[in-house]
Amino acid sequence: MYQKPVLSELPRYRGRQDCGGRRVPGGSATAKGRAAAAAPQLPRARQSRRGPRGPPGPPHPHLHPPTPLLPRSPPPGPGRAAPRRPLPAGSRAVTSRRGPAGHGRHFETPGPPLPPSRGGSSARRLPPAPGRRLPPRPPAPAAPAPRDMAGVAGGGGGNGNDFQWCFSQVKGAIDEDVAEADIISTVEFNYSGDLLATGDKGGRVVIFQREQENKSRPLSRGEYNVYSTFQSHEPEFDYLKSLEIEEKINKIRWLPQQNAAHFLLSTNDKTIKLWKISERDKRAEGYNLKDEDGRLRDPFRITALRVPILKPMDLMVEASPRRIFANAHTYHINSISVNSDHETYLSADDLRINLWHLEITDRSFNIVDIKPANMEELTEVITAAEFHPHHCNVFVYSSSKGTIRLCDMRSSALCDRHSKFFEEPEDPSSRSFFSEIISSISDVKFSHSGRYMMTRDYLSVKVWDLNMENRPVETYQVHEYLRSKLCSLYENDCIFDKFECCWNGSDSAIMTGSYNNFFRMFDRNTRRDITLEASRESSKPRAILKPRKVCTGGKRKKDEISVDSLDFNKKILHTAWHPMENIIAVAATNNLYIFQDKIN
Image (spheres, rainbow, N blue to C red):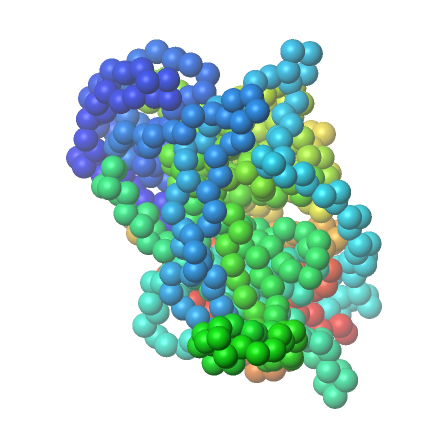
């Protein structure tokens, strides 16, 4: 949730040292109005790789006070391997274990970026890990075609493709008093849809696995049960900045499966971790130097050589951190996205986007930097970023001003100059005090085909054609009835909520959340929409969800709910759609609801 800046607490911007060791003079903070742009609070500004831009002025009201940078290790020279540090000993996390599993120390500050090539193009190619050659990537198995999603927003009736949504499962406690650490902060299906990962504000990651279909229960197409639970991040304190780093999981992204193990990326505000989730059902017995209980044997009493053998054991799921990517972001990380080449990924904070190689932890490359030389000139921040699903050189990022920029890494090493700029012209007659706040984009997602992209602002969802930049091809109003309540939503900070959105497997429908535990679905083919509610009252097995309607004024009907009766503390910010089937996961505070379709 966005926090409104408290200007009186912002210290003055004193001189600081950038990456080249230069001292940059500062200025004094000036007071701004309360209706500042809807942007998250930022901790401090990081150095620019493009050299001095002139002395910065006073800090922007959305920025935290700056502090000295962490020291950087020297870059690798010719014939010299880049510094790498092993993971800390004993950093394995077992399913049933809670605590600081996989919490490792930070590595060096990222080194210098790759220089542009001398040719006409300066396409960015990241080197493999020092002293290690990546094996050729096996061809991905052909995925089954997604099921027909026609009529996803229908409520029954009509043609044979229409269906209704019914309750499947709910995870989480029913307690009225919800602990802050138990609130779900992200939801993500893997590429096959067999695994579903959730992260919470307590730094935990819970992975659910879909069980095999039961022939005795033909109506049940497999339930999701807990597969693994581990502590991904721990709360930290930066003594140089006197800043607490929350353990909250901001994003989870799965990597395509290449072997029996599964890999995922998880991030909090500062550190990204690559986790390996693997199974073990055998153990070794018959050691020579230790007994079965683990005690060491007297070497003088060993008279025969034994060959250890593997014996079956109860299935154990282990989660171990394989890479820790740290010290590369000065501001809060809001997005991570895995590239289609399956070797690199990007991470975005409020002013910069970095490119990483999955095998290299001590270097990242800055590809977007929108930090102005004078922080008083800061007018927008980055809110979300994502790679194209098929073209490894294309990515987009959205801003708090409601614009989307598409960049091509083949054009230049630093993608500050976009290739395409998507913006819808604003109607001057409808401009108000809250126009800039509600136009801020909270999420951007490419369609599976790569032809379209979807953006979510506070009141609507828009679908853009990549070939048309001047306006969206489709616009869906999510909760237009809240436009008259913007003043009260600003007072209780709900206007800064960041709603996510998602596509179904065939790109024919989209889903996003709202308040009062409502979530909305829009059918792109039939232009129909439906409002459903995630509630325990309708949590009977196979119970059909009834459409909900909000009454904006006049006489309220029996099945309608008044807009004044909406509970703004109950909100659905995070949703996910199964990539192959009509199964959705909806995060409502500390509960995870799973719904599936019921064919008519």
